[in-house]
Length: 134
Image 1: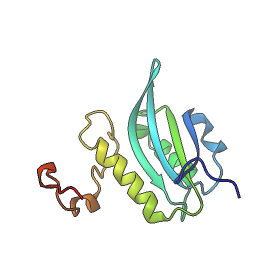
Image 2: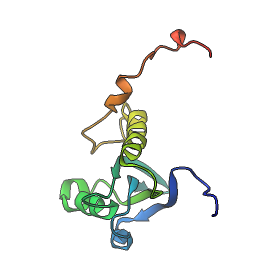
Image 3: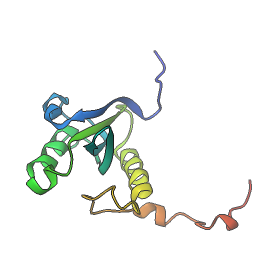
């Protein structure tokens, strides 16, 4: 059996135009980012996930594109498809990590309702001075 290059991520597509949404295989599970192209740059507008139970990434992107107000805010997308053995909880934690990082960014996550990951608030010792070396 060949070894995987990454533990979580099976394959990616980056900076893909939204016209290519229909090329995404059904029930693709993973993390995706909606991007807005400005010249040579791609600004992150939203980070989301699809665990593939009801809809894969393709369905989620189609839903984002149906709303005219949201549709004009992004031009491209990036998908990080997860391996089949990655659980839905692990996908949620990956998304939570990324959203937590971007939560204070003025430009990123302009479409997001959830700006942080609640489980991170329950973790101990947020102050680095109180961390103990093991």
